[in-house]
Amino acid sequence: MKQTGYLDMELLRFTTAGSVDDGKSTLIGRLLYDSKSIFEDQLEDIEICSRRRGNDEVNLALLTDGLRSEREQGITIDVAYRYFATPKRKFIIADTPGHVQYTRNMVTGASTADLAIILIDARNGILEQTIRHSYIAALLGIPRVVACVNKMDLVDFAENTFEEIKNNYQRVAERLEIKQVTFLPISAKLGDNVVTASANMNWYKGPTLMEILENTPLDREVDTNTRLPVQHVIRPISDQFHDFRGYAGRLSGGILRKGDPVTIFPSGLRSTITAISRHEQQLDKAFTPESITVQLADDIDVSRGDLIAGDGDAPLVEREVTLMICWFNERPAVTGNRYIVMQATRETVAILKTIHHVVNINTLEPETGQDTLRVNDIARVTIKTAKPLVFDPYAKNRVTGSLILVDPDTFETVGGGMILSR
Image 1 (cartoon, rainbow, N blue to C red):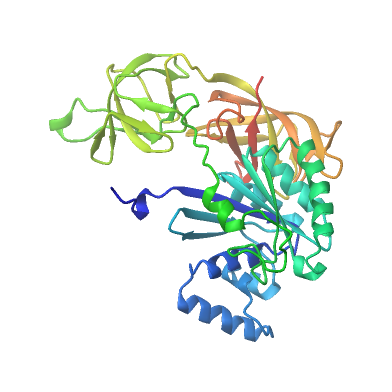
Image 2 (cartoon, one colour):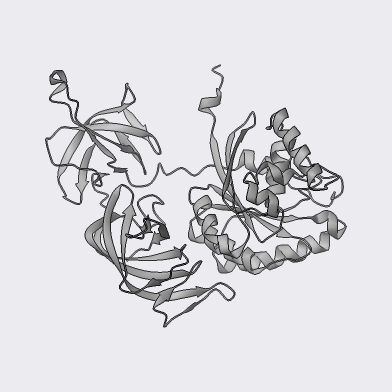
């Protein structure tokens, strides 16, 4: 029987989020430490840093708080990505900040996640940032949430405390329409229910966090409509290959097969796939999210920013687009302002036409009548673009349904949006 090598292992991307000091970095440190996914020199480094800070024990949060400013302040400022593997699966972790002013970083870290871990301090219960991060997880379409009630050692591992928080969060999840939530009592500092089962909470009969991560099904977008945003047009210089023209990009939905009829958007021109290659390997078919080059039967106009779609499953092509947006920048957004729009591989300019409402993160209710967006605001808006966008609703495709706004003067990314259906 063929053995599965490291490169063939499944990859799970997950993010951690929660309020300040809920223990996100410590939890990730514990996962890395207990799964033996750190090197000896890394361990020695955090032992030295822990002693310098006056800690009697190794501060596992220092494994992810890599920036000097983070270590000095004892908080996570930027998104920290960490990679590790077990015999069952590979993982990419995005450890995101808890402070309100860094909420935009959570959007960045969670945008590609298959699963979100929401940390809740057992002493404090549900806080505003817990709701904010849960709302963002729902907005980003993360299919699964693990609500980890942390610091159970500080409440004497009390089952009734866990159950009360579980019931409160369940009501939040229902309002946000988060359908798949797993509840887990843990102590990241001591390791209870992180990699090994807790001897202090024998009332809990469920899996550990590592077991959840290793066994969570991966929902890849192979059953969605076929989408290949064109990143690059390949035309070799050599006369030997003068008839070759390839269109390279990352397959962002469905399966593409040699011989498939396709339509190019926004032009609407049609052709057939004659060849698919990955590096120098010829393929009969390609799966999401492989990066591939395709060739077409017809010599038609296809450029960077165009979309190759499966025949009969057309995307939307419009210049006015309504979306939910997270505003990242200290400089407010004002209706009428002009921005660069980057969506899949397409780039154009747009004006912020309408702000329909801003979400009150405490009540989760829409508030109307605003003509500006401030940092960390989440709002429903409409933009009007100079060139039509080719897209799907975000609920159908997280790649073709998302976009970012860029300030044309500073080239800062100022907002991230999820396109809604009509």
